[in-house]
Length: 309
Image 1 (tube, rainbow, N blue to C red):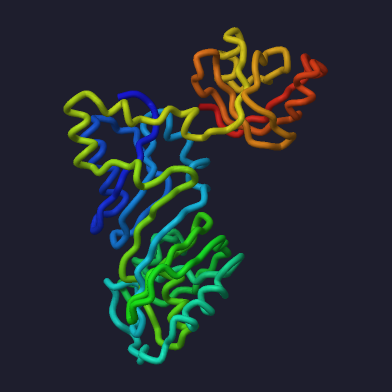
Image 2 (image 1 turned 60 degrees about the horizontal axis):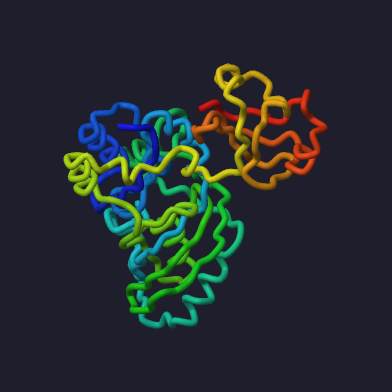
């Protein structure tokens, strides 16, 4: 199995850890990591990195996410989803479509969310769900997230279906709970599907069953996304003579560069590749591409390392 990234379509009822555990058995590879957890209630897209691609998790995890969510009005739960204990029931019958649209509009932009008490976020070294299961009160955790787009797809009360485009770290469970509070009816997340991460789409993902079948046929590498393609950053191709130095974090001088894939600015995230296209490192540009083309930087560093791959 080569290094690279796989797009996985997780089904309902298993954890992200379960996905990784099963892939280790299917692929016979230990070095595997995912780029963003999906709760058992959720299904949809997970990015899975294999081999050296695990070094890219920090970059891939920060990408924008897109979800479709089914929210049930009239009941709040202690987990903010349908697996929790109902903590409140209210009449939803007077809620109109315009009420929902107005409430959704209020969530656009930068908002503060309460982290669900049944979550893996830690307090004093332990995940919150351990405290919640023992009915131990801990300080409420909050985080700032960004909702770039939120739209009503279907109004069929007590169910409503929405589409959300949001930043890393957004809890759609919390969004459902907050929506119910704003509407005065209470609400919880009934179903969730992640449809996109960055530029990667659920339609291109494989189920665990399909991964196993392709593995048996020797055709899995056809779906393996190369490291350089996974990030899709502007790239600098370096001379083969300096590749070993880059592995040790040596300065990357202008004289080492043989080609730039596209224009970039100072401070922009870029990658280093060798002549064959193999990804060597990810970092920030110390100069812009225009200055690099003017050959004024041959003896000066042009790249600041973030991660050697």
